[in-house]
Length: 202
Image (cartoon, rainbow, N blue to C red; front, side, top):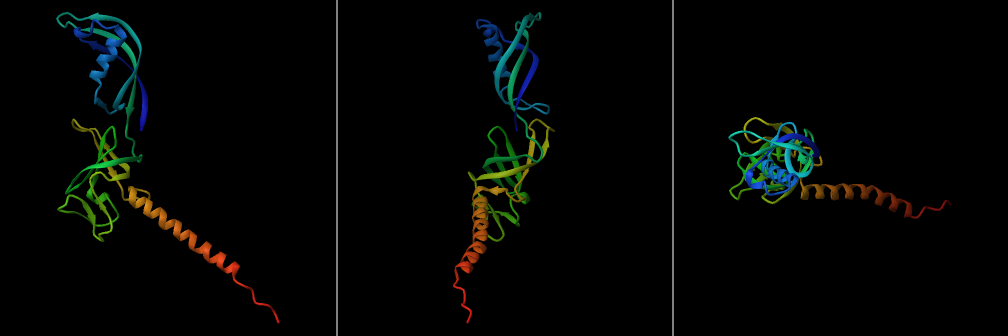
């Protein structure tokens, strides 16, 4: 989920940025420092939206840079457990698929890709035992976040597509069409029954 976060921190501005207006120099440094920054508390930084406030700078001996206590706003993405996400499959392995969610990536274990026994084919796709469903690179899918871990350098997000309303978009469209047809059959029968000529009593 996307959030707007307001952060207060000391920003170390490098000497090469001293020619800029202070607020511009701070924002330039923030864009560099917070690029692809990930934190358990605030999530993944998407962009530095605005520098709200900049206090007077201080210089630390033998450093050369200036430190400004600043208040700024960030657009962040923080995955939440049970959150529904839309993404595109961009890698498939023998143990599952990696899905690109735009800002971050998530992993769908092979057992969580569909309601079927799934195998990894030589063509690089994941195929169900009945052969009717398969997942390939560039497929658009709907998934649910079921695990988030910040252990190690790269946070891990586990997803599932083994629940109603989840999976490849093509499957979901097909299911919707089936439901539409099922609902229309009883209605058609009822209309036919009403239109049938009634027998006259003798």
